[in-house]
Length: 254
Image (cartoon, rainbow, N blue to C red; front, side, top):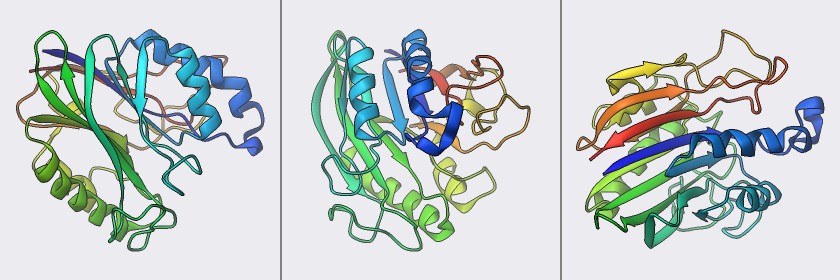
């Protein structure tokens, strides 16, 4: 089974972003996602109006996920889009990155905001292969929260993943961090483990095109996957990226 997987923080609709506010870049974001033709897409910082726009413009995809503030539509989503012609959805849910993961809106440890992970159990319609896709967005301020969130993800995977799995997300954690080390110690960092890498490994650069940035967006996967190629996509228009993050894409084989 061959999968193309994408993770992309699209930046929430912030009216203070000026020329980079969502109304001026939403078509570019949708076009970029469409051009990748990924099978599985994990997005972050998606507000309800952004979700509705992308669902309308990304033809052939279904999504799962709820918003983090109330478990319904308030606040940011971490949705998973998947090709509905290729996969059947077997099960899905969202949990909160906190000491009380089933309580909607709960804030964990030293986090500044509610944080979530959404997941979907999918079955390939052709091969019958089952796998789990999970998507998340760790807190940007709470170092303890990021480390604890990483441990929580691994604990949940033990319960949820009866087959191979993929985790996409903005982890707000660079490779030296405890959160990154916790995940990469047992999972494959798709970009680093790929046979071939293209593009800069930096994924969060700001809107203006630059050679600087940080690596905080990842695709992790279970050890059963082979990873022929992984890349970051530095697509820009007139000196600006469609978001303050660039997408990370990996091709996986099982």
